[in-house]
Length: 433
Ligand code: UGA
Image (cartoon, rainbow, N blue to C red; front, side):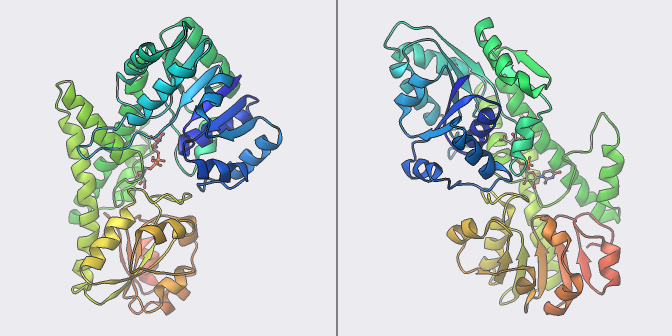
């Protein structure tokens, strides 16, 4: 199939690369001309395992190309995916300016049948607005369909999530659109849910909100574990083995971050409000998430007493492992709060150093975890990179001024660390307060 992907961010780029890998002819578009010229030179703007190789391979096979000319992308493709950003506005609502712009451009340039597919995460009813916008601005009398096909990929595992999805969700209003999308996804051999557009839109927001709820639930439980001396890891394991609950997204920590959950929870609260439903549950999910960072900061203060002028080591800056993404990363808020109290921060991340440099000031960025420990009063684990789980703890101990580890991701075995002579504080682990 000839496909265009409008918006070469995370979702757009990964989807474009994967569709081309499946044998389709794909054009990825972005209005950021610098990004496109770099992509043409093989410079990939994000770190995602396997993505650079896949892009290069398909460019070589002439199945994948890049442009910033929207007219060209629309004319050359039968299926147009909209994967532009839908950032949060001040009030939490999703900003759909980008979607409207693309819809208008499609209307102005379409010369024969097109299937326009929303892939960006959007509030329910956006599909209706896209259809109305195209109908309003359309120049020639041509047929078109609008569809919703939300993406469920996780950063760091995006390619494998795309190629081996749990399900594919397709929201359509015509058989023609359904046939095209079912055909496109057939090679993935995954279960498909073919629904109406509004239901498909809701599936995406509901899935992210439900996963965020699971995380806030387990984080709330970690507070109880801390108080009674139970182990949240055992509690998660015991709960997760129940198939009705499932083991995923039950890791307690310092709260969810990233470019999706915080934004989507906010947007879902807002859209519910707009249609007259007060989604109280989600408001609490959001509050618990915000409190979890304060809970971690309190642990630091409780053990260090005075934070001012102390050197604190931070391991992990990205919002989760295997990505260089620091958008809404808990690390940023935690570092800024400690700096505001006068702490000196030394930090390291395997991939996010460049992006952190642009966002953080006054942080000593180190070459490896051991350098972070040099002279530090304590070591904070903020992202659960594998590299940190495999560190030489004897060397870490030698470098630290005080043998104190505060593990915001519960990556270590408390008993093992205590036996080695560390003071170990986790989240919801026995004797961790
Ligand atoms: C999330 C969803 O998992 C994807 O299905 C969805 O497609 C994507 O948002 C999106 O809407 O585009 P992502 O934000 O990449 O993906 O990352 P996740 O792996 O879901 O992690 C989100 C946050 O939750 C991270 O900060 C992570 O540390 C935290 N988390 C996750 C926990 O604190 N505990 C857990 O058990 C799991």
